[in-house]
Length: 174
Figure 1 (cartoon, rainbow, N blue to C red):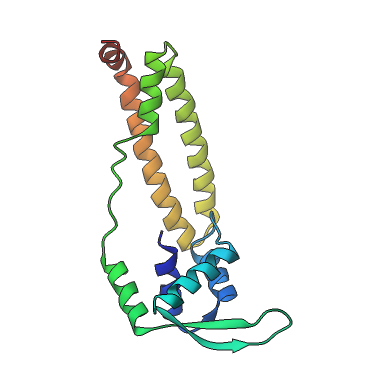
Figure 2: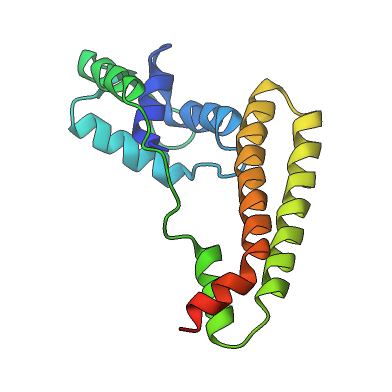
């Protein structure tokens, strides 16, 4: 995820302080990985330097001065370009799971046990995500659906690999 573009997109609705940006980001996108304040302020500093945001005001308070940031026309253009650019699909051609299966076979370990343990871990996470989805708002439901679909694809691969394990062992042993 592009933190810079996400923060810029949040600024399109109006100027905000760094604290407000962090809070909104965490509420909308950071359930599993909230931003650190340092990351917000270093990103805003970089966006300011690149002319994508400007300081819209400074307020004195009990602590350090609070800058309020506003998006510039260049920032709006940057967000528009980012939103219009499709994300590159991740084909997972260098799968860690595949590597572990082959190494298990090469080292005489039980690859079927490895696949069973991985299947159990996927199912555990799927149950957790399903609970979260059931109790969550629409944003949680969509995020959890995305993750669940990927996990389902992994489970299909685990089953397919288990069915072909003897054949793979023969090819690996050559």
